[in-house]
Length: 429
Ligand code: IMP
Ligand code: MG
Image (cartoon, rainbow, N blue to C red; front, top):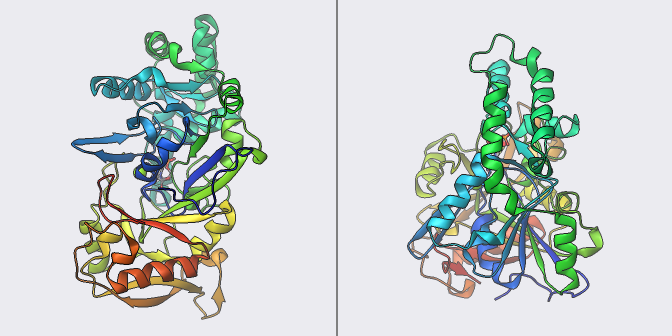
């Protein structure tokens, strides 16, 4: 089964899968489904702030850093140069997977990816505290500070792990540069502890470190195809998202090129993933949010609690203004709608189709940060049936089919498939 409208083009071996909302769209399960058509699944950004849950048979996995194709045998998994990765997080995930009988030698990490150290997580929490009421609501994993160090040329890469002397002195330098920020904080990580921990993990991680550019381009030369797996979602992109309530990386499809060392001419198709409704964790604008019992019902029926932090997610209707913007930013060919089953039992299902400023004038995505923003909601009849067993879009209740058609129309992109339950097979095409 293919979710793409066009067959693969052998000259364009890379396809990209991205979330088009605020993360947690269900990219993990879509990538898991697509994975068998690719030799390599590659993460191009983010770190263990991500949380992907996949269910296959009795196996339920919550992954944070290893790409979601890991449960499909034979695929290789690359944690690309655009990512920032905690040594402990990676080592723990390798252990968990190895215990499940997964061959973890298939998992490699770019020598150019940056290491997230405990001092990054400490800084992340400290900065959030200082932001007070304006807190971003980060995952506290140190992602932002690690990217700051990367562009500030204070970062330490996986390639550095192989050079213990240099590693210790780089850690010292990074900590000295951070001293003023840590002033007055308790729990400042100590240099010798950071170095000792890094060296302890180095032995375990070094066998997985590769030159990602050679790794990918050698694979292309062998005729292998690559699926670039996005993390977070388009609306959390550091440039195009709801800044400053964003993550610190490029989450849009273009980020796959800079985050994996591939040219745009290698990219074939771009698939977007969106929930049939919308969620967001953390602070920041969310125009279609439902603050009433309908939002609570979406949270309960959709089990909308963060995989990484356990926080309840804010819930609301599908936002077509944001989705159209995401279609432009990513150059989407197609979308997969996830969690359609969560809407079962709603008498009426909303889609936000427009924004208006406080004074009533219509506006586009640029109005999103207007505190008085109002939304135009289009209401559609719901369905009472349990749709979890449906495997063909044609067999869905008429109102569910009509909703999918409407989602495609308001987004301006065809819908390839809809997920109707958490298991791998629960997909209507
Ligand atoms: P950070 O990525 O930890 O710096 O958090 C920045 C913002 O992105 C916060 O609003 C987080 O809740 C959000 N965020 C980060 N990773 C994810 C994710 O995987 N899913 C959903 N939201 C995320
Ligand atoms: Mg998630």
